[in-house]
Length: 113
Length: 114
Image (cartoon, rainbow over all chains, first blue to last red; front, side):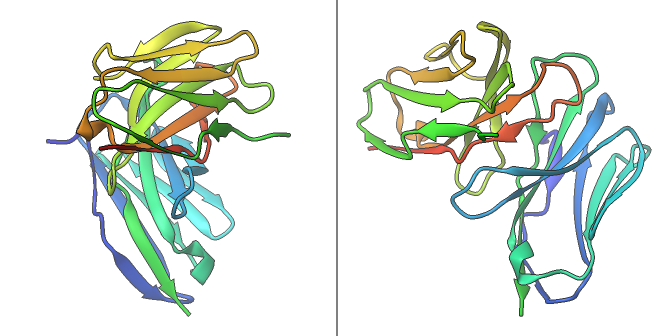
């Protein structure tokens, strides 16, 4: 079993839709949770990070962490064609583990005009 | 502010050869991490360098080695290349080695081993 599981998609939605992207994980020691966006042939770009449980909002993006269920989500409101990319969740421990981020497989999102 | 840069962009090597990939960290960042991303997969942590010392390592064999220089730029060296080493190699820099590990990635070097 992988430490972080993410549905690879692809996920296709019409412009303006609300998108929900999810990851589950097995290691309860994870404390930092991040979402990265990766456009084709580019490096991942950090969107948001949260510490422990709770919600965090940044513009059209909302990140949620439910540690009791070992489940994290990223919501994108009013999705745009420019949001079409692969979304990667990543996690890390609270103590120094050599800066190791553990990534999910990534979900490919396509927003159609 | 200059972002993370990597060179070369693309590279084709033959099995058994050696390769060196280079990374310049974002201005002010003293920590560099390297990741391998196979096609259709998430990045996998290779190792991290902090102030010229290896600070942590993932599940990669010793033929994957690295260096960090006084200006915080870094190299990834891979010896005895195997076909499975074909991947996108990503470098990420961060302001510090402590949580929350906000890491900023470069565009990557795509390595093809034939």
